[in-house]
Length: 290
Figure (cartoon, one colour):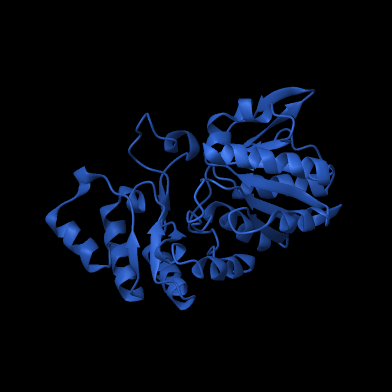
């Protein structure tokens, strides 16, 4: 087994071929692990034939991770996970994302899943990698669900990471992946970016309160630097994945608008309508909002 190799997978999440947006979830996790010396490989079912996954599995990775939003992607990730189990039985299979977090106990009951990372996954996934490399049991790790003695066990969520300390996503192997997505016309309209995590509006229908412990926004300096880095990488338009733009912080939104103007990026994002005012709308329009 290659204890330095982690493969991160993004199963098909739609029946339509054009839906191949940048999978920010696995790229963020991969860049975080790469900074700690772990070799990362990505598999995106929407772009890659199965032979690519089979080739990666032949290298006997320590972990194979799946980011799962829900719906169509549950089926595709389950199908791919069963393939991993058949071709690389020693590799551990990890699921994370919205559905595995919301339904952690139900998810870990599946025999083709070894671990579920709940909530934001960077720190938990790293701790899991370290434990497995060292031959230690990860059963007490916060943010992890697993089977202990054949029974499902869901550990408490861990505190959310400081977004200010997380690395810029599109570097290392993720930079090469970005170049692939930029060659797809539909993706050119929407390269994923996040300026914050969490949302102060605790809507009962939303995944966010059970996934993010709190709301955190990046500093204006970090946002400005990352937006300029995106522009230098050839990005022209971005989709800001924040649940609520900059965590609903009006100073944060205005700082974001300034950074977008400087980087000359066009963009889209999400904001509650009751936060809008003529002045804020003008600032957003002037920053390239589409």
